[in-house]
Image (cartoon, rainbow, N blue to C red; front, side, top):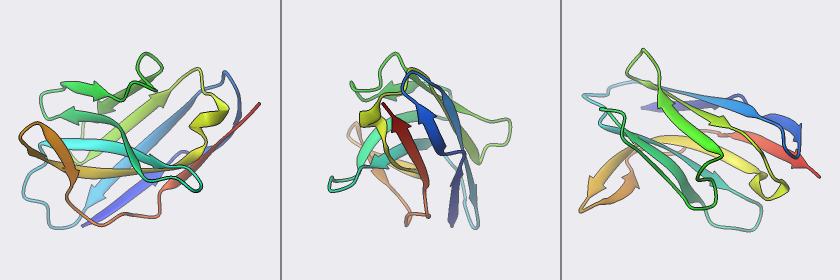
Length: 120
């Protein structure tokens, strides 16, 4: 399975970006998809998740600013990021998730991710 994230770039604080994710390969079904990010020197963290029915969940640090949504193609997901802050600077990754007792875990290896840089 390959996970391709794109749409990153350099933006000023307060600006917006939309990230895209496409999963390809031998995928039987996709129930959950999510966006993660990893800032320099920090661990990778889950930013947002979405179920096949459209139910979403966000980390507190992006709640109200980011919106995750699925595309018409079931293997795609997007993240609309508004009111970006310098602390949002990170490499953003997408993945297909598994749900274990309410906690999400990435199912596949990480793609290259897409770099988002927010300048102050």
